[in-house]
Amino acid sequence: MAQIYDRVALIGLGLIASSMSHAMKRAGVAGEITGYARSPQTRDVAREIGLCDRVCDSAAEAAAGADLVVLCVPVGAMGAVAAEIAGVLKPGATVSDVGSVKKAVIEAVAPHIPAGVHFVPAHPLAGTEHSGPRSGFAELFDNRWCLIVPQAGSDRAAVERLEAFWQALGSNTDEMDAEHHDLVLAVTSHAPHLIAYTMVGVADDLRRVTDSEVIKYSAAGFRDFTRIAASDPTMWRDVFLNNKEATLEILGRFTEELFALQRAIRIGDGDHLHAYFTRTRAIRRGIIEAGQDTAAPDFGRVKKA
Ligand code: NAP
Image (cartoon, rainbow, N blue to C red; front, side, top):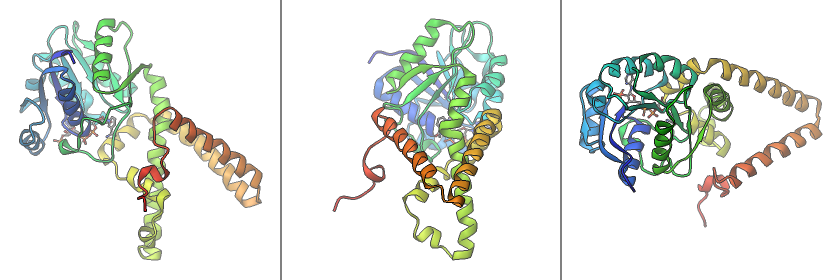
């Protein structure tokens, strides 16, 4: 595949940045990849595994001269990182990010972007519960969506170049405005994570009563919650603090529906429960038909006899 950017700088070297680096190398879309992480330990690991062509000791050093700079730090750290690199950005360069929240990140980063530099926020909808530079892999973005969030007056050529870049990394791309993005993600990702965190917390409280039975007999439903609830605490703290409005809106609706189901159970309204579960089952079918998950039982974890 043809090179898209001469030099790409990754600021933050965790799951997403390391996966981007592997995917960039697979696709041959970057001439040189530079990287920076906050702690010397992470930078040492990145050097040891050859994650980037050059691991730098400051964000500014990594960003200087880059054609694309991607901020891959927790949402709450984006503004400070943007301030740090603002003075060294090359005219005509693109600054992007991979943050799970868009409105708050744009508010924090945009004021630092100098004239003549393009700011094109993005969010790859792909991840795992693992973090750090060793957790990345080239296939993470394959057949997943990357949402691009152009700003008013964004340079079309810069937006299209970033879309071509994410497509080369394996993603499908779509454009969306920040507010809509934050609401969609509150439904599809943020509220479900909070519910998983809560469910695992409840089970943990119960475990103290039933001595480890919760873990011992952990069935598929609960196991899936524990996987989600193992996600990085810093990343998810920042997601909730920065997507407050949309998350609270969805949790409000969730609570109302939960009360309705609770009432149906209490009064023995089987028709209500059956109709509700029939509707939700159809949604699962839709996700499989859209190629966004496997139809295999238990996500393919069931071993064949
Ligand atoms: P990660 O594996 O935990 O890596 C985070 C990186 O950011 C590390 O290199 C860390 O450096 C650095 N960092 C942390 N706090 C910082 C600070 N205050 N200042 C400067 N650098 C800091 O995280 P990730 O999963 O790659 O997530 C990165 C971004 O992608 C987040 O904005 C997240 O919302 C978004 N995202 C995540 C997922 C997912 O499922 N994980 C999916 C899509 C988007 P040290 O290692 O030196 O501490």
